[in-house]
Image 1 (cartoon, rainbow, N blue to C red):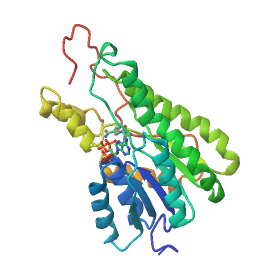
Image 2 (image 1 turned 90 degrees about the vertical axis):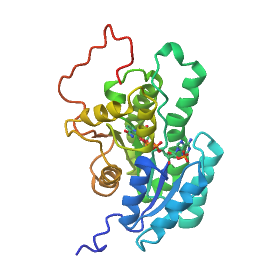
Image 3 (image 1 turned 120 degrees about the vertical axis):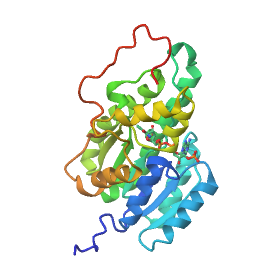
Amino acid sequence: MAANNGLRYKDKVTIVTGGSKGIGLGVVQVFVKNGAKVVFCARREAEGKEVEADLNKLGIGEALFIPCDVSKEEEIKNLIEKTVAKYGRIDCLVNNAGYHPPHMPIDDFSSDDFRELLNVNLVSYFIAAKYALPYLRKVEGNIINMSSLVGQIGQFGAVTYVATKGGISAMTRALSIDEAKYNVRVNSVSPGNVWTPMWNSGAQATPNPEKTIENGANSQLIGRYGTLEESGTACLFLAADATFCTGIDLNLSGGAELNYGIKTMRGEKELPF
Ligand SMILES: NC(=O)c1ccc[n+]([C@@H]2O[C@H](COP(=O)([O-])OP(=O)(O)OC[C@H]3O[C@@H](n4cnc5c(N)ncnc54)[C@H](OP(=O)(O)O)[C@@H]3O)[C@@H](O)[C@H]2O)c1
């Protein structure tokens, strides 16, 4: 048995934004089960507290929920400060909280819609990194930014979202260069379709949810959605094992970016759900 009883991130203090549901929840669960002390945030307190209580029953690692809306700089600052006050260090920051607005052409997005989305999806990652880095540098820790495959390949009716995700992957590369002198690694993860509450509520808003969900699964070569556990495991790999990786964008996509498909939408009157 390994020195840490097989626990791959024992006692490592990790912050996960948007950890009460979806991909972030998968990251929180996998890190706690591997011995980490995980501080996670979301806006809805009751859901966060429930996740915290469930995980602390496991008797491995630790979970601590702190309410925080990542669109507010003061709340992000508070999240970092409370983490350091309780645990005295930060080994890993997983920037994950984000939002995908309904699919629309550019004509239907206002510039304020775009500014708000940039604030939640991109500027929040910058702010959390900025306040966490003084601590990450002390322990040669790492940052993982949840991007998206669509930042590389684009997506219909999602001009603002895709721009925020492209920005995340580009910012990751730039920050990895600056932080290398402190031995802080900065990487991103680009999921394809992972089955989460966000995916489900997006599908329910389409004319034929069942068909949308089926198409979502078949968009991956692997022919299904990614799971929360697979998302957490990919992040654990970057945090715990990938010590020679910095500035990379790890596709967690079931091969969705590969091969030709039927892609033309010329003449289509409806969005291609
Ligand atoms: N699911 C996919 O297929 C997919 C694909 C590519 C990329 N991603 C990316 O993965 C990340 C997570 O997506 P998901 O599908 O897991 O979403 P989700 O199911 O909607 O979960 C989002 C989590 O973030 C929290 N959150 C949302 N807005 C927040 C805010 N302003 N401040 C703090 N917490 C906030 C939510 O809790 P509250 O609502 O209580 O705040 C929840 O815990 C996002 O960055 C998304 O762009 C997802």
